[in-house]
Length: 98
Image (cartoon, rainbow, N blue to C red):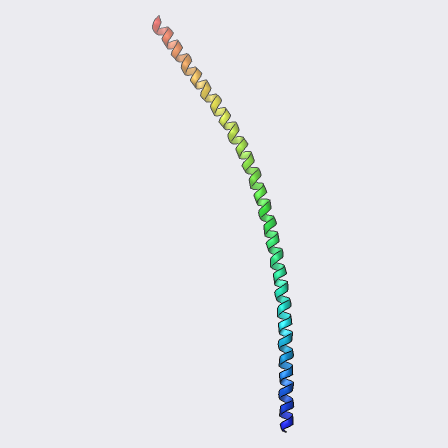
């Protein structure tokens, strides 16, 4: 009877070791797969960020052009105002001299 108990204990130990080994291998495969999926997701996010950055750069370039155009228009407007003011001063001076 003692040999039956010893056989049962050895059998149980082997089964336990086999189960733990299988669990470890499966866990390692799952971990590797999870790492691959995370890497793919990170690469995808990098591509998305790169695309968004390119779009923002294009928008900034358009805004810069619009600001430059608006600045030119404001400068022209200010020149007209200055010339008009000088013209009004000249007319006022002429009318005073009369």
